[in-house]
Figure: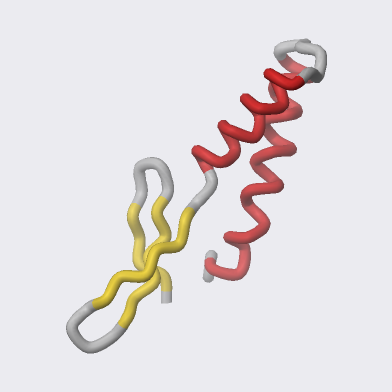
Length: 72
């Protein structure tokens, strides 16, 4: 399964997931601080694409919090 087409959609999905956790499970009211924690946690856990130059080609690498994987 290719993950590259789904990477741009993971950040909004993480925002919705952390919002659900913060507002429904932890029962906090939405204010500036909970929204900033929500978006910050989603940014921290969302994947990033980095381009690495090899000797003969450029390779795209997905970097998550604890994972570095090459994407074709």
